[in-house]
Structure formats: structure tokens, C-alpha cells
Amino acid sequence: MNGQHTPQSFDRVLSSMCTEPHPAARTAAERFLATNPGDPATYGTVAELESRAVDLLCTVVDHPAGGPEHGYLTSGGTEANLQAVRAARNLASGDDVNVVAPESAHFSFRKAAAMLEVELRTVPLDRDHRADPEAVSAAVDENTALVVGVAGSTEYGRVDPIPDLCAIAHEADARMHVDAAWGGFVLPFRDVSWTFADAPIDTMTIDPHKFGRAVVPAGGLVVREPATLDALAIETPYLETHAQATVTGTRSGAGVAGAVAAMEELWPDGYRETAARCQRNAEWLAAAFSDRGYEVVDPSLPIVAASITTPTFEKLRSAGWKIARTERGELRIVCMPHVTRDALEAFLADLDRIAGSNGKRRRADG
Ligand SMILES: *Cc1c(COP(=O)(O)O)cnc(C)c1O
Image (cartoon, rainbow, N blue to C red; front, side, top):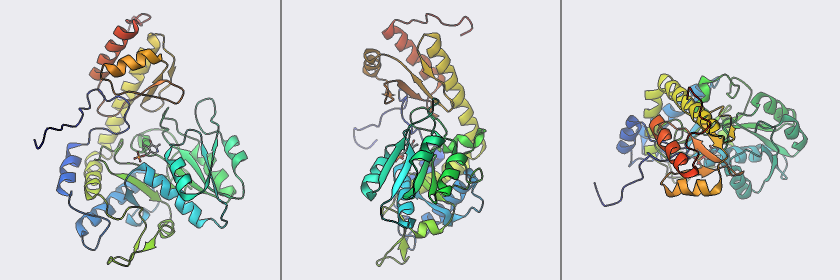
């Protein structure tokens, strides 16, 4: 090992939306560390890999056409969301533009709105933490450039009613964006509507560096029409290629190579198995919390939110668990691929010791 710094182990990481990369992704990333897909005329191999990555992403999100002209690999979900807002703003006719998003939308939309100087209108959710089409409809007006739907929300893993939101957006002459940054590699195996085939959505965020098991940085922006990328492009006088649609100039070839390696290795069977295992862990954990008398938000995707007290939360953190809370204060456990049943059992043992719940109310069959 070079130097005395060691990254954290994933053993006690329970609230991250990132995970341990697939070994093939790690190897590929290391090989391509010194490449720059931002300059495709010089770094041709990694540029071809990026084409491959976009093509694979198109498959994952059921893009009707497919092909490398339908997106690019971003630095993460933040950049992809920013670009979706930017494209909508650039394509809108007026100057006084707004974006309508559910309250569950990721905070990256607040950054996007601030940077692009557009108004962000957040609307209340329904009782199950999903976007409420009536509330969205009421917030949309003639200056709305974009409606956002979330497919796998950050706090409770909910999927908004994408086809309904898309109809509202297009009715108002606005564009429709789906944020599947986290959920995109789990949802292909679930019976929900969220893809380009399920509704005429315009853009989507899907991050290989979350459930896709790629290395950071590997986010993804996928667009229905290549013209969307043209709306983002600026001229590049110093490069052999003449336009660039990305936010960053020099970009990570490691992220691109890792994403391709992970997707080639895992799509679709590996992702399907991982999604099923993570969901089983989430349901098992949710049941364990309820057996102990905690209030739990039903994990429709592999995120479990449970109401524990602040002192208990703090003690669990002191015991080394990397955990976080929802805005309402619930403990939030993201059952990513690295979160094993053994880790969850060890966590519950610590919870029982700290909260004194000690398995009271545990089911006989638990
Ligand atoms: C993680 C996440 C983002 C932001 O992605 P980064 O890769 O952290 O920039 C955006 N939206 C959702 C739903 C996310 O889960």
C-alpha cells in the first residue's frame, strides 16, 4: 500500500446510495485512469467505451431507438439533473421559466434552479410519499419548461406516477424528466412504469455509480431526441471535435470504463439477482423494526425508514454505524449490494443493546 491512508470499509455503511464497485469495474477503471472522454479525438478508445455505455444505458431504460447519440456519462446524478433543467430552459420559448417537481425531488434540483436562475416549484406528495398529479397539475402554467418525476426517491424509494406526470407536462408544452439516479438498476425488474417505453418522457437520469456497481464518477443522462444534446452544446475552438454538450471539460475515463465493465458483467441477470437480494434484506429489516415496535415506512424499493429516537441514533453512530436520517428524522437504511444480512443482524444487536428493546415483541417465527 502506498501511504498510510486507507479508505473506509463498507462493513458499517448503511445509509449510502453508493456501494462497493464490481471487481470488473474496479479493474477497468484502473486501466483507464489516464484517459479523458472529454477529448474524443485524442482519447479514442475511451470515447468508444462511452458510446457503448450510453447504448447499454438505453437498453436498461428501454429507449425506443438506442445508440450513443442519446446521452453521455455525467459526473453523477447532480450533473444529469442540472443538464435536464438546462436543456428544458434552453428549449423553452420565454425567459421566465419554471420547473415543477415533487417535494421528494433530490436537492440537486435546487442547485440546478439556483445556477440556471429558474424558479423551482416543489409540490406536496400524496400519503404514500409519491408525487400527486393534481398538485403537479395545479402548479404547472404556461411558463413551465420542465416537470420532474422521481423513480426511486432518495428518502423512501418511491416511484412517482410517471405516465400521468408526463401527460400533464406535455399538455402544458413542457418537457418531462425522470430522475432514476438511484432506482434505475433496480426498477427494470419491477412492475412499474418509469422508462422511455412506458411514457413519452424526454430525459432521464440514471447513475451507474449507484445501484449499477460502477466506480465513482459515473452518472448518466439519457435523452429521447439527440436534439436535446444539441440544445446543450457549445462550440469548442481548441478541440478537434467541434461541440461539447457536457458541463465538465476533462472527464473521468475511469468512470466510463468502470460503467461499461459493470454493465457488461451484470446486465441483466446480475442486476436482477442483486435487486432481489437487496429487496429481501429491506423487507426482512422492516419486519425486524416493526417487531420491535418501531414505526416503519414500507420499503417498496430497498430503503427502510424507521422512527428511532435521536439519542438512540446518536449512540448507533458512536458505535461506528454510518447511518443518516430523513428530513422527518427517521433512521434511513439503504440496502445497497454491500449491505449483507450479517451486517444488518449486527446492527440490530447494537440497536437492542442501546435501546433496550432486546427483541421484545419479536414474532415467534422471527
Ligand atoms: C443520488 C441521487 C442524485 C444525485 O446524484 P449524485 O451522483 O450524488 O450527483 C440525484 N437524484 C437522486 C434520486 C439520487 O438518488
